[in-house]
Length: 512
Image 1 (cartoon, rainbow, N blue to C red):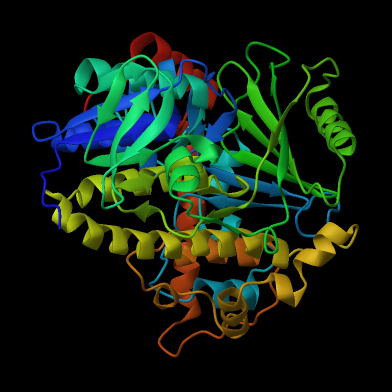
Image 2: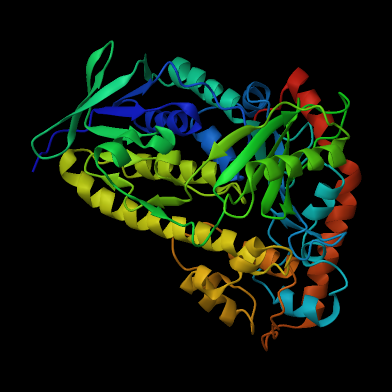
């Protein structure tokens, strides 16, 4: 077995996935390995608005980025969760929140049982958490005096993906010592054992390495095209395979910036609405089997007209995708990160979160020599197969719980043959008790039990939870009051998003 040292790591493809991966490895191992990123000069940056999880704060801090610099450069804003409109029945007023903050007292008593027992006139998330109230009021998750990356309320970001990639590129080149090549990869040179020896480039000849990270997007140049690792389709579970995206200016320069990603259900899909400081990123995700492109565009334009009064927008950009993930993510000395590893609809903003997880896992377990790589690869493949399956189940949960019956799209999502077996089993258990931490015991969990509770009871799941013997309503009521008191204190104390972002643009944030 080849026992050569891992000294040269080649990342193929830039964008958020490539530069986050290069940055994390270089930040952690810059004294031991040289990271080179090569990308085609013909690939234009993607400026579709994207959402992140709170984990991005840790990732940026880990690579040495200042939050103020990131917010300015990436045209970023604060995200405190998601708001779902029209997913339950499609009737007026049908909405609920999935906030980033855990319920007050989560795990200390059975909040669900006591909510069902005497508080169902209040939406579950609104009762157990202060954060939906901040979101409804457009409040920021921190104050101007709150240090970099610190939070009053847990938060992630909305950002311009193209500008984010450019910001990461500059940081990696200037601060972390990443080597950069702008060139075309025209071939792959292999060793006798099947490993990649080098990439043949158009202008720089062979680019050698011991580990190659495929961040080439949906074409998956190395893992998919070179090694032939197949994409496992999930079209039978999640039907959406198309999107139309457009950038929409605010009606006024001081228009409010939303604190959540808005996901509004449509006849055969849903529309995302992400507020950045300079514009909104809006797109319609839909199933081409249930909706034509023209119908999807008409629905998108109608949404924009209704939400902002604007009917003169740019022509939306069409994005097609095959929902699924690779049968393996790490094969021999090649590992895929980002779209090259798979893609599904961005309902819970899992794309960048999976990039973060993969990049961190590669850096954390980076083998010292080739002899240890196959062991790392087996563990990585098992972990990320589990994570992809869990993301798909969580997204499917939103559709399974819907009572909409206005199209075959919604009805089909509730057919038993389209529901993963593990999700069917969990739903059966949850008919008699709330989701608990014990249901999710793997170290590779993606969503906590609280997130399942927010979706289940936000969508009116009819299971009947029974309070455990040691639980009592008085303790639950204390936590409900605590959530309300926190909301009452925070609402007047926190600025709105636009005000805080404007302050940061001028003055920055204090250091920790």
